[in-house]
Image (cartoon, rainbow, N blue to C red; front, side, top):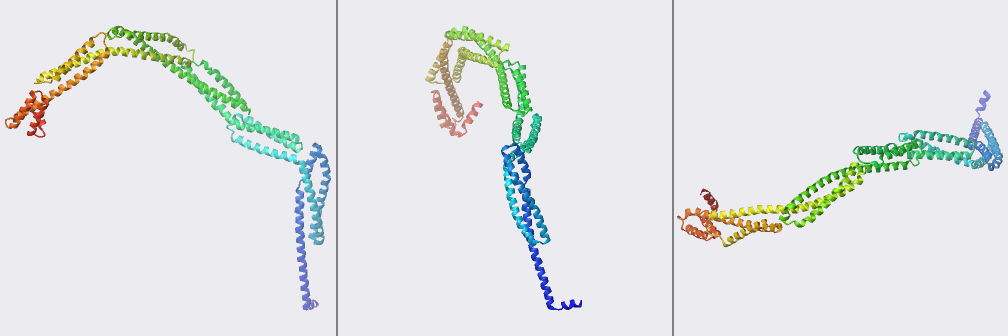
Length: 575
């Protein structure tokens, strides 16, 4: 122990030991760095090795071998490729063993040996990558057809999945064909299973055939989803409802005794009902071919039937309304014709109607012709064996003829009534004019007018001449109504104008008398009043009544300016 302490106390020994320790540490660090670098290189090679190993060469080779048994052209290529595959497998096996040995060497610290082995591994892995890439490309070329088939199958699967989801979402609208849809789904799933089996067995021809069947099944499935809901809606809802409405309208029309046999409504409804039943069965099986055309045809026929029924009902109502109207018009025409016969025979000589007999005979012939036509038409209506739409035309024609005939008869009757009524009116007017003339004479006599104008005397003579002439015209045979009416109009205008003039003169005379009487009370008081009133009286006696009134009023105005008129009226009433 003392010897060791002696050596340790020597500084050179201490330095030497320290240098040794540093050297050992440096060596260890270098060793660690070299080991880490080798480890990283090994890990990189392992990753590349694992990537190569992941390529399913064995699986692809087995598929290629299976294909080569079916496709003769691929047999020679696959056979030649087996040797390359064996070499690649041997290389991969050697790489795996070499990787394990290199790892052991790195762990054991044999870094120099490991470095050499890693360099060899680098070359082996590069070779392996080249071999695997070449084999994988070759096998892919052999399996390309299978890959295309698998991709196509996957597309069909996605499409099938979407169609199933769509079907389930619209199950209510597809209830009438749901059993068929379930069958289509089941059959399609079976086809997918068969296709997978054929592809697994590398029987591409049979797989292709199954894919074609799947495509057809999907087309059918999609066609059902696209067409069936709207078709079922029409077949189970729209068309039956339309048929129900037509049947209801037909029943109501039948109960009203409307003739509808020519429309064959019941036969049409039976045909449509049977066809609709067949279409529903066809839709239930998922077949929509021709159904849309059938449904559209049903709707068009039902629409036409409904319109024809309504048209016949309208024609039926119109026909009976015209029938009643025609009977009424015929009775009216017959009544007016009888009236014309009686009036014509009685008044023809009196009113000069001898030239009207031809018109009356023509009207009688027209009425007789209509009378002969009516029973035929009304018999057809009563028998109810013909469509109203056909008979309503005859009714309209008869109505037009009766309307025209009644207008003609009414025109002739108006002429006769006008002639007879003209005489009566003329007599009444003559009587009124005579009364007016008497009133004028009474007024003139009552007021004892001291003077009357020569024109008035002439007007009175002219008025009396009018009355004499009117009386002669009324009693003349034949009566000339036109001359009578024109003469009567002239007489009325003249006599009424004369009557108004007389009334005006009488009113003026009364005012003059009242004014003079009122002014008499002031004569003794005012000399000028007496003088003016005397002048007014002189004008009055001379027949100048207007001048007399002006003088009298002006005189009273001097005494009672502004209110003389009320005072005169008051004085007149007191008198």
